[in-house]
Length: 462
Image (cartoon, rainbow, N blue to C red; front, side, top):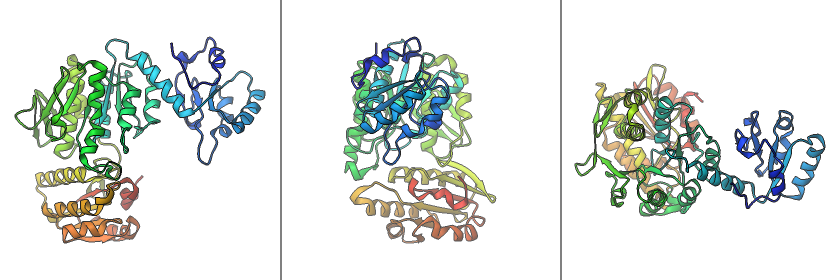
């Protein structure tokens, strides 16, 4: 039975009667997302009170609204009670804490069903890619039985809202865990209780808040200890044995080590159009770079581990995966092939993406001078931001790219390291020049940087 310590009026929960919380289709926090059967939880906004926006929602049949207690809110709700006497308006101490508590109790009960898997993903790079790949494969092989993180809703609010989408038909949850401050992964693990997982890698991410990669490891690597605790060491946890931090994690009954080194339990190798992990071979011509090939074959292995009888379906699903918008995505504009990753960037992800781009264009017989590389700012790197940009610029230059362009407030640091190239303050300052002099004149383009730069606007796509 669910208990709610943050409810202020438990009688109103009881009065939901035959409908009950167990019959709620979804809990939504956005009035625009409401559908019949949903229940609304109002989260106070900085500028807008969502309770002022629920009239249409109530007219469409919303039977319950949870809201945070305040004198202002009580005044608004009292007016609704007059016009919508059949709606249950339920007060809570804190809306977000209530959602977290509700999700925790809900998923705890769901996990008591044998065979249900909550697979969590942490790490510096590739979390969202893993989530999208694994979700795609599982949706193909066990359709309608998978719930996964949508977009990048991987924080203290997004995680519980994902968990609240879990229903009796759900057999597998793919949960992305995000963090940019110490302790956040532990909080999310305590909330979600994962019984399987992977930490993708450890790199120089969010150093503004963590300071060193060792501290990043302490944060992102906590998922291993959570799975170990929740399953007494029996739950599957994949260890990236090529990562010098992650390889230090101790073996348990459920751990499996993968990597290119011979000391890996699951040996990984690569093809021009795919990769092999243990005895599982994946071919997909739409992904670029060893890092993405590794991501895909690892996700196929995870699916195969839990559903070994669906091997052929899993291989077919992996081969049909396509990158989503702005994430390691190949697009074509005016006849030019563009590798676009305008969602996120840090030193380690930048290096592997550059490696993958070079590998790809050379495999096609293209000369380096027929490519253009555009690097945008890498944000949240802390006090050593200038050095990281300088080192990345140096690395890009060392790969032999002739046309290097740097955009953003760290452009001069990139250029200092590369010792060649051009720099621009913003996308707006470079856009017209790019479209006139570069876009149609180079066959292959590499574009990567942090989300704030919106590098995709260089060629007018959304």
